[in-house]
Image 1: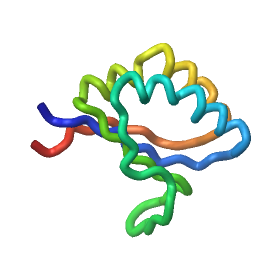
Image 2: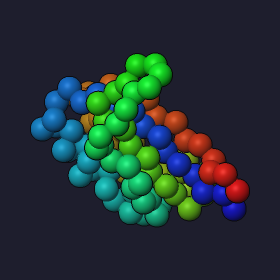
Image 3: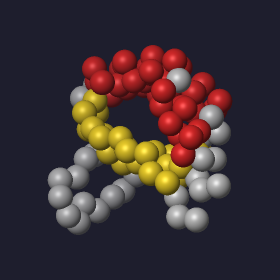
Amino acid sequence: MAKGYWIARIDIRDPERYKDYVATAKPAFEKFGARFLARGGEYHALEGAGRARNVVVEFPSVQAALDCYNSPDYQAARAIRITVADGELVIVEGAA
């Protein structure tokens, strides 16, 4: 079974409130077996517009990635995130 990945590109408008998002999202990530491969850090925007924060999260499967996103725990965190940050989030299937 192929792994699933969240790829998020984020610009944080309110760093203090973003900490609330991170804390609220943590139980969902733990429940669905998330492993952070990239979480911020240096980046090089080579094509297109870049975002200040880039995150790659690995899940055991695409279904686990989708289930995490749709879980009540993550949706509570998302409600915070959308008020304090702008960005994009996609879920992709890993190469087999």
